Image (cartoon, rainbow, N blue to C red):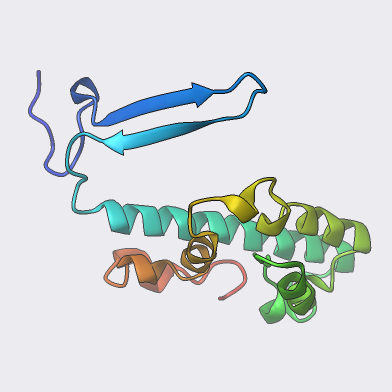
Length: 157
């Protein structure tokens, strides 16, 4: 077997333990715990992953605005952004970020907001923290990331 790269986890070591429970009504839970220390780069990797996902959502809004306006760049491109909101009120406040989209397109974005996820209101995870990290991955310690300067995606944000 070739030597492991430093900071990576080997598949044959089973670095995670998983436990699942399903009730008779179909509801249940899954627990994942680490059995080995996480690599030092995990915060950087998670932050970058979340930032890239965020960039994809912003790019979808940008491209939709281009299609709707038949202009590239679309009008007010610097104001375009996929809103991620934890309450209906914060979505209404952020609707200006997608005002170039049709009401139907805005409705699709509203339908996938975290506040519409079933069971999120009673979740044990701090959903607000996850929303903030998705928008500001540097809070996970990625400020020194080599790609930090290259992060100004399609929308320039």
